[in-house]
Image (cartoon, rainbow, N blue to C red):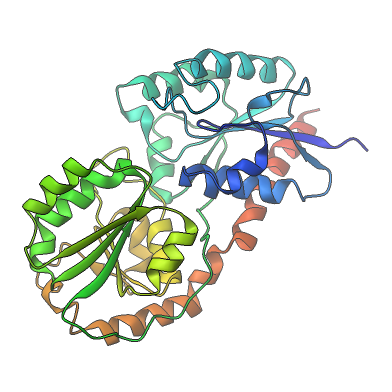
Amino acid sequence: MNSIDIAWLVSNVKTADPTELLNTELASSRMRAGVSIQHLSQAPGLRVLPLNLVGTDALPRVAFMSKYVHDSGANLYMHDGGQRWDFWTQQVARIKAAGGKLVVDYTDNHLAGNDMRTRWYTHILGQVDGFVVPSEKMAINARQYWQGPLWLIPEPIEVPIIAPRSRKGGDKVHAVWYGHNSNLPYLYRFIQQEMHLCPPMDLKILTNFLDQNILKAAIAKGPKSASYGVGKWSVASMLEVAQSCDVAVIPSDPTDLRKNGASANRVVTALALGLVPIVDVIDSYRPFSDFFVDLSQRDILPRVQSDLIQLKERVIRAQTTVIPTYTVDRVGPLWAGVVNDLIQSDSSRS
């Protein structure tokens, strides 16, 4: 029996090798396309084609499309320099002409915007056969533009489940912030505003790119008692830094139409790392309300240090109840479920 070919269109990759996604800096690609490929490549009857169909004449039965980036501006990746629009348009046309299905992995609500990414999703929408979303809120967002098949697949944790560290003492709360540089404005707002209400913090910042001048300007308006460190964002660095931290600060903007449907991954990751999440509450975080500190509850923030023992007991409870459902082994098979649904749908119509 012939295998069913699967492909991913992914922005900002340097090669066509699917294993590149296991270590790519873009977390949304790593935790979604990477996890998907990791599982699909091992599933019986399925074959994963090279990324973006580069170097192959084979065409997939099902193609997933990751987050569209028109041009990284770094000239490091395939199809940078504004070439990705035309190349992906051609590949989608080939896939559809061969009878393949196109599924959009919709992690940011770009259809609600007004930029090149909005134009891309509008441009491609008529050829789409399904959407995958990371959260209930993003499903609601997507339903404003898409009424066809839709699947919810959360982002898994990439880290082992680690017990919270014992309080190390000292006069500061040891904190970490991790994330893509597109989320840095939320961190800078936290430094300049809510951080003034918190106990003195030693804050480690892990990201893919950071403008030191912008950071310095934010720190100048932050609490004088704080100290800072900056490092490269990776799974290894998160594991290393978490060993000496108590909390993870996860500021956001619940009113941001593009970001308010984000997955719960950053909260889930913090809990898995044994850290107390201190968050702006977006929709996907609400099921974890027993386990985090809400930044909007300003009266609680000054007590974070004195309440750490009790807060870490909540983290332990989360690690034994909800976090195991977010492992790669639990999430990975959901991607094969999308493929099976589409194939069965095809078979029922034939």
